[in-house]
Length: 225
Image (tube, rainbow, N blue to C red; front, side):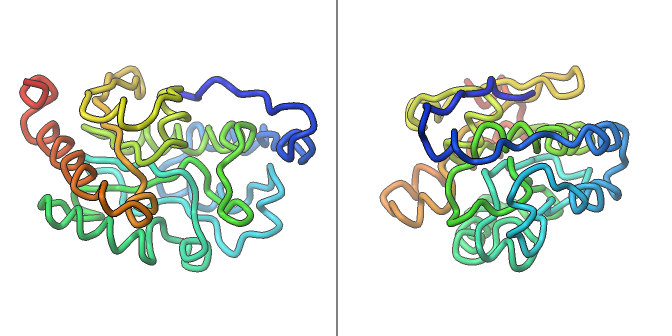
């Protein structure tokens, strides 16, 4: 499910930059690709200028069988260097939150991003870039078949729910996404990098993951009650 495209204002940096255009051949290929082939398909993508500046594409951490899927916005510097999502300081904080909730990366939790390459200077993903990466993320979600999804941050929430409200207004609720014809409960929370900048929100972020864990263990109805 792709968020509705947003048109950049005339004269803005986004309007002046070359627009990312999905590679039709790769889109067709990834739509039927098994999990093991997605990373190699992503590696061949040159739909936008980030292909010229990336060190590595960053596809996923985890695999089908992980019942919870976390969606972030894009790789940062550490992720670009290692080719793994959520490493460095933000990854360390995320790992601590998951551990405190009794969840383990790679066993209970898989992690993907809206973008598979690092944006210059860690800027926000542009709508055309998210659209160019959409087929990769959509196929990942089809194959992961999660029982619950956690959207981490404003950009992931925009891409998946097409919601622009403040995160505080979206937290604590169960949203729904249709994945391969199946409704999946969705929880919204802060991006770990935001929690590092605003430690006062860490407890709220931890409660968001407890909420998602309760949905995973007891179902959306029990968690909502």
